[in-house]
Length: 93
Image (cartoon, rainbow, N blue to C red; front, side, top):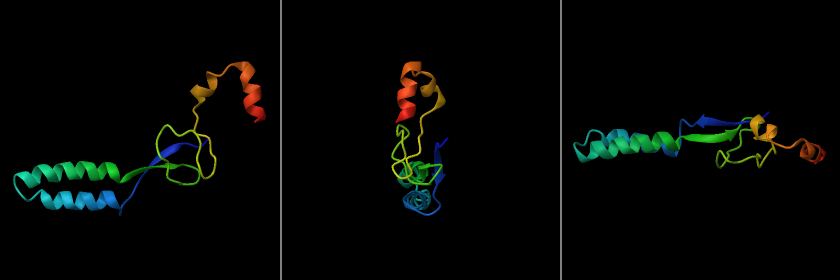
């Protein structure tokens, strides 16, 4: 079953923001505060959510179907909550 995985970029927007944050760390005192904030922001921006099957970028964790390869991201707990009568209808689709 496909899943949504996190992928970290080495070069990109997040990396550039982190480099700017590192440079601002040495400008004391305001630059240090802004530099730390930019390091945190850059580290969050460099992590992207991707499909484990095709590697396509996914918009959020709430996505249930990959827009490219149509892989299903639903969990087994959601499948277990379905009523037995409706499972036959879902399988036929």
